[in-house]
Image (cartoon, rainbow, N blue to C red; front, side, top):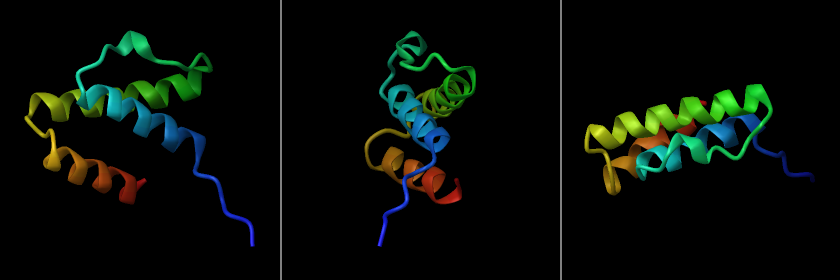
Length: 71
């Protein structure tokens, strides 16, 4: 039985979220394709917002799990 790969846009979003929640710069985006880059930046914005709201550590992990479950 083959294992399904995760959607590339979801992976880009989650990677961007991780960068944002840790306070890293948006300029660190590794993607050049416009659609994938936009997904990463959207995740980064979510992560930065959660970082500013104080959702780091355990709270940030729970938030990330919520985002992953919805996507």
